[in-house]
Image (cartoon, rainbow, N blue to C red; front, side):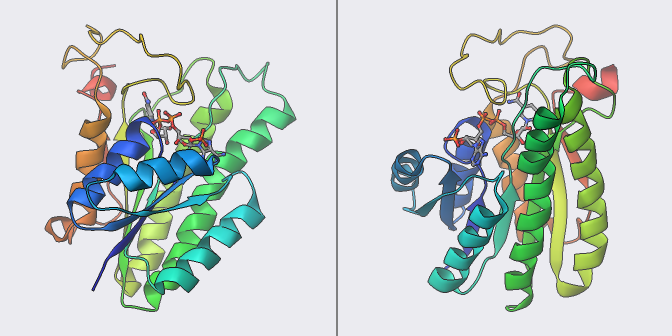
Length: 240
Ligand SMILES: NC(=O)c1ccc[n+]([C@@H]2O[C@H](COP(=O)([O-])OP(=O)(O)OC[C@H]3O[C@@H](n4cnc5c(N)ncnc54)[C@H](OP(=O)(O)O)[C@@H]3O)[C@@H](O)[C@H]2O)c1
């Protein structure tokens, strides 16, 4: 039986690496992005050819359409990885309601809706695994106001959903990324310095580092891990 994995925001950087790792683990991966052509290209490039769906995760109806597609086409969903994120560099003083709502809707609300809709499908066939990609930071972050708040919410969402869904054999966990690849939302910014002495490991991470942690958490090797937040940040957060 073919196992199905859905990765939100998976045409670039961390999400794309997660899609590749899961395809390597034998999953049929559904690649998603706002841009269908890009999602199609990535889905066809995977080691095990996947599917794709164009969806804007800031829109409730678009998320509903995505899960209708999953249910009709596959009748099952074994893995959901919530990865999509939007960020704007703003302080609380500069954060207007439009930025607040767009960030919270894209990040926190999409994780809530995707977890809810995915778990409804998973309950129908005996369980599954959900991983939320968040930040490793447990502290306030300067000029990242709405993004930091959304990620704090995702950390709480992970634990509460983990408790609610464990009786249905659905494990919910999170991976907390540190600085990795290009900064989130800056597809075109490719010259982020690799070496960084503020990180105990001495350098920023690669998308593959986060993807491997996700691959582990969705596997049976992690079958007793429930509600965990696994930092993948070269030791950055513990050293601050
Ligand atoms: N990179 C880092 O240093 C870092 C650090 C800490 C945490 N993280 C977390 O890691 C995750 C991935 O970050 P990343 O840096 O890999 O992001 P990224 O490079 O900006 O990629 C984001 C992906 O999501 C898609 N996307 C963005 N907005 C979307 C929307 N509204 N609807 C549908 N798809 C959308 C993008 O494709 P389209 O633009 O084509 O839609 C792209 O595939 C995020 O949760 C982020 O918070 C990253």
